[in-house]
Image (tube, rainbow, N blue to C red):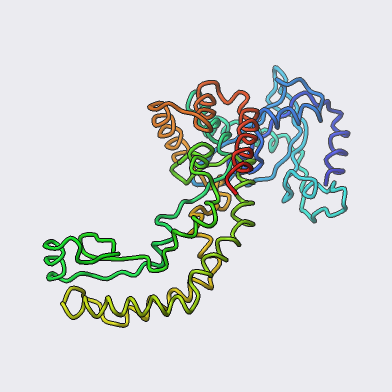
Length: 388
């Protein structure tokens, strides 16, 4: 395909003086590169002046700019609107494989049509100008939108699950009206149980003791210092996320081992005997609503929990990496995140990642990559020096 384009350019006897690229904003985000970085790459390849190159992400609401069209077009003459050149309409993406120039000879098989009619060229130029006019994000809003996208593209998101390790193995009972009344009279009626308005519960396995044996995987200050809570999850810079992923992937075993040590069948049977005594006393006094099979259900749940390493892992760490979603973010979510972050961060004294983001908001993202690199080193030091 590239050979046909080169031959057509040679036939037109043209000279490359400008390069202009329109790309869907979502596809640009996937590249993890800023507009300036991409423009410099194009400049290095073409040897053109920097201001002769434009790389423009466009955002067409609820639509994807999916066309693969490459054109070499002359500038209009003063007295004529007709342009010379050609348009290459193809199925191939702007990649080495798509263009047929992959060094490993794994190029795709693509379709290509070369169009040279002046009317078609003129119409193509008008379409491009219309897209730029309607769908380029403009002025200050554009700068904020692109800045927020640029910042987001330098990291990834994590979802934080509610609850804690103990919540997943709690034994819970629902109080009757009589049980609530009795508890109001005797505050010590249900020792060892946590109480709310309608229930009593306890963690018979005392899983919180796991962290007395094996230190928590992240220091308490880690997430507060090196992540930011956004509308779509906690955002973490990419290089710091590598540390997080490594811990989530490789440091689970000591916790699983300790939890399995606590939840052996022998220990569970011993706890079941204790729960049966509690249940009988509460039921005889008409304090609880459940039937005795609630104990059997808890026992089965503990067996399942003990054998499910993934569930144990999610209960310990609580954070789960969100699949790459930046290409799905619409302008409304991005701008809402920008406004809420700037408002919340401006109302408090910030440090760590929050301070870096505030400076990026104020200076347009100048040197944000360098600041994130410095922050990454601090994060590494924190994790490497945490208590063993």
